[in-house]
Amino acid sequence: MTVAIIGGGISGLVLAHRLRSRGTAAVVLESSSRVGGNVQTRTRGEYLLEAGPNSFLDREPATRSLAGTLGLETRIRAADAAAKNRYIFTRGALRVLPASPPAFLKSDLISLPARLRVLGELFSGRGPRGVDESLAQLGRRHLGREATTVLLDAVQTGIYAGDPERLSAEATFPQLVKFERDHRSLILGAIRAQRAAREAAKGDGAAKPQLTGLLSTFDGGLGVLVDALAAALSDTVRTDAKVEGLTPTPDGWRIQARERGQPVELSASQVVLAVPAHVAADLLRPLDAPMAATLGAIEYAPMAVVHLGFAPGTTPKPDGFGFLVPAVEGKAVLGTIHVSTTFPFRAQGGRVLLTCLLGGTRRPDVVARDEDALAALAREELKAMTGLTATPELTEVVRWPRGIPQYTVGHLGRVASLDGQLKRWPGLHLTGNAYRGVGVNDCIRDATRLADALG
Ligand SMILES: Cc1cc2nc3c(=O)[nH]c(=O)nc-3n(C[C@H](O)[C@H](O)[C@H](O)COP(=O)(O)OP(=O)(O)OC[C@H]3O[C@@H](n4cnc5c(N)ncnc54)[C@H](O)[C@@H]3O)c2cc1C
Image (tube, rainbow, N blue to C red; front, top):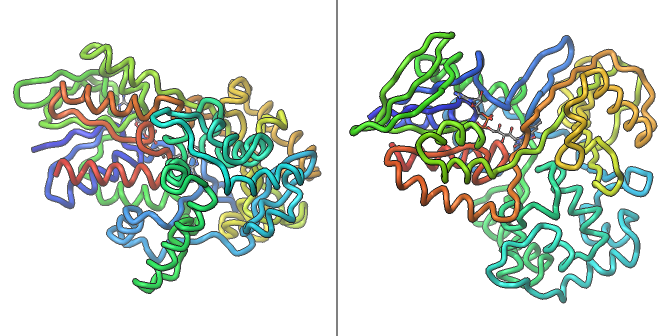
């Protein structure tokens, strides 16, 4: 059996690696000249920049096991203790996100009545059964309007850059929906889950928190993982190979591609689409228009990334991991990662590196601006929010017209439909960040699951 994997992002690479380790032949076809997809680490002088993801939580067993298999355990770097605090920009100031319930009650993140309303969550009821609620609906029922607008909006912005009125609660924060289902109250559910995790940790001697995990990367950025996978798969990956068509055959699939500009055809017994949903839709439209329509309904949030690097001594080292900006503040900046505080090795010699994320579904227009305009917008809003006035020695802008998939209301139904529609096409499979989780960990977990099902 040969599995043709279309798309050499982290999903496609992990799938190929796992299949190979199980003795199944695989070939990865990647349209661009490099593998890794969204994962793109670049060195610029004394700075290590991430164009896409910056970090992952070290709690995912599939990621840990992958790092172990690739011999990368010793290269994992957890966030510095100085990154402990996280901030939210609200009511004209950066305010720390409280780390415990007593700290929350004392904090000025939201008003006193709103904090008391959050306490009232202990008495809140369950939502309607069988309804795919929006994140904002779930949030308002449990936490009240202000906490939803400030707190929940900021938290989802940090992951989805989306609109809580449109995101599905169950598809984006399944744990919250499970807490409600099992315990009625989110707070009670969280307390009980934490208690259970502590008990489990006692049992196996594990020291790390199982619920949250530690924010981590590798000593050379996330590109270390991609490079290790690419090296292990050197004879399996074909770059500059853009797949343009698929045809079912009696014993599998024919794949039409353009490799280094030349048309080529390949045969495989199984095909996995590890490409963004809109690319999968384009490839499948001639075969299955309804399935293409389901795939095409998965939207993406456009994003821009602006890296700003500051020479030693030109600006103070900012505290904490960074800050998030709720939509109600009306900013184009969604949040800023204090990269040099979180991972000091990513800015050498006492330099300060900030990575601003802009746009999202709240301001899709900004991503179309040219690079100078985006950098100027980021600096202008940073100045207004944090008082930062120093001139950066490094500015780099990356645009993601289709950045993060949006799991809007109906997403789980769409994924279930896709599972049904795939049954019409034996030997065809989907994986990637569009379906069962948008993070690097989710992609690794889903690709591992699929490899185990196939190999
Ligand atoms: C700005 C940004 C910040 C993020 N931050 C984080 C973070 O901090 N932590 C985290 O966990 N996640 C983060 N994410 C999400 C994470 O990066 C992605 O979910 C993950 O990398 C997606 O991997 P993938 O392989 O599924 O898809 P992709 O990376 O999109 O890979 C798909 C691949 O398919 C290729 N392709 C497309 N069309 C074709 C074709 N016709 N033929 C062949 N190949 C094709 C593409 O070139 C690409 O390489 C971030 C994403 C973005 C955009």
